[in-house]
Structure formats: structure tokens, C-alpha cells
Length: 173
View (cartoon, rainbow, N blue to C red):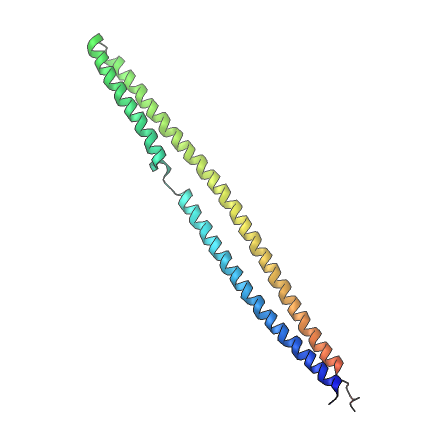
């Protein structure tokens, strides 16, 4: 066996081992990236459920606002009753003052509900942007996987071609 044949065989073997190691490392990195992408998708879904389906009217800010209006209404009603006893306010006038207090509470609750609706729209918009970003990253990863597979196949064919070209078919000494 000539030195040239040994070198061709050794070069082919080194290229083959290098290609296998590259494929293994590439597959391991792709698995890690896909696991990270799955984790990010799950985290995004949890964030969306927590924020979109949260009870905004039952959070501390909303409860505090309603408590302030309720306290104000109770104080105003006490004052109206006292004023009615001293000045002889008609029942219709007292009912009108009470209706105004209820209107204030209705305004606060309506404002909170409106804010909740706007908040849900904003959360939905952010969620869609995040999903689009995740899908873009996934498409990029698929493209890179496809390119890696194509390069590995081309490298394998080049290796086979070089090995076949290195053999002196019918011209051995």
C-alpha cells in the first residue's frame, strides 16, 4: 500500500469522524435551543393567563378606590340625614342626594371596568407580539437546522467523492 493511499484513507477517516462529531454537537445544541424555546412559550402562556384572566375589579387598587367612594358616600349620607333633621329636608331631596352618591360609585366601577377592558386589550397586543417573536425565532431555528442538514449531506458526498477520486481504479501498482 502506498503512502498516498494511506494519506487519502487517513484524511477520509478524519473527515468522517469530524463530520460525525459536528452532527452530534449540532444536534445537541438544537435540542437545547428547542427546549429553551418550549420553556419561553410556556412562560409566555403563563404570563398571558395570569394577566389577561386576572380579576382586576378585585385587586387592591380597585378595592381601595371603591372603599374611598363608599366611605365618602356614607359620610355624605350621614350629613344629609343630619341636615334633613335640622332643616326639614323633603324625602325626595334626601333620595336625590343618595342617588348622586350611588352615581359616584357607578362612575368609579364603570371607570375601573373600562380600565380593565383597555388593560386586557394591551395585554393581548403584547402577547401577540411575544408570540410573533417566538414564532420568528422558531422559524429561524428550523431554517438553521435545514441548512445544517444540507451542509452535512454535502460534506458527506464530498467526502465520498474525494475517497472515490483518490482510488486509482485499475491503475494500482
